[in-house]
Length: 89
Image (cartoon, rainbow, N blue to C red):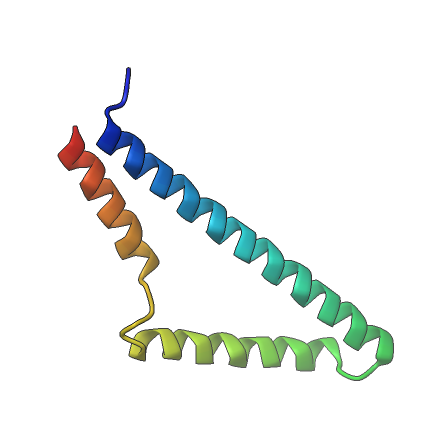
């Protein structure tokens, strides 16, 4: 089934968004792994302390996302793309 120009635009936006998210997640995992290895090697922080710090950071990040009106909502981005694709069909 051939796609028209607006459908292609929506799919291109969707693919670009997924690529960006995947790249960011991979980078984050690599950075966290490197930090864990470095801290464990130096004996600076125990695994339990590191897990607690990450839990605190995650809670802070979640709270920031709730109060920051400028932060994009990932679900809304994909809902908008799907709505555009539905209009194009």
